[in-house]
Amino acid sequence: MTRIAVVGGGRIGEALIAGLREAGTPASDIVVIEAVQARADELAKRYNILSTGLDIGCEGADVIVVAVKPNDVPAVVDRIGDAISDSVHESIVVSLAAGVPTQTLENRLSAGSPVVRVMPNTAMLVGKGVSAICKGRFAKDEHLEQVRTIMESVGVVVVVTEAQMDAVTAVSGSGPAYFFLLAEAMVDAGVEQGLPRDVAHALAAGTALGAGAMLAAGEDGPGQLRYNVSSPGGTTAAAIRRLEAGGIRAAVADAVEGAATRSREIAASAAEDDAVD
Image (cartoon, rainbow, N blue to C red):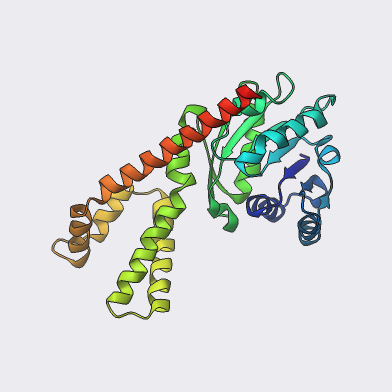
């Protein structure tokens, strides 16, 4: 039995709670800590779980998941540190906030506290997320495995190093927006070619779902899958030729670099704020 406290009842916090309940985690093993009472009551009723204050919720928890906005993380972790500082029970503190290094959390907790950082993406809202996890200085392999099991309730999990987290943020953390932009462009183009918007939307969404499933199957890489669809001299080859001529690869590379750079800037800012504190 693993007792899990979820601090933050927003969309990401609720998605995790829903995934845990769907995966069979007993309601008695989950507690939600949410500052807005109406929202806390709503989640408690919807998932039949306990809603309580931070001090009580964190006391005795095996895993404390911080699912608040990045700017709110330092103040929340300070309160968590105060709540568990005198406890003989070891709690793993898990951050789902983008751009907040493990060291920022460790500096605000008792010496030696195990911390695990997670970079999820919004697809966890439908149970199809991709989460990258890495451990802090004091987290052990068994701590990482506990967090992996929790995050697998809302999708696929990969283990990375902290140094790779900015790249993860740029590829999968921000990644759904890239696919949404492509789908939006496909819908608009379909309408220009004479399709009703609802039909174009259904075609784009269904195509994304099927293509994603084929890619996730792992039998072939994206290059081979694209080749399989592209008959010589056919319609797909004509479309790919124009996409390549339009610089799609360079645009994607530039976008990922921009997101990774911004992630590093946010992490540096968090580190500076922590040093000032």
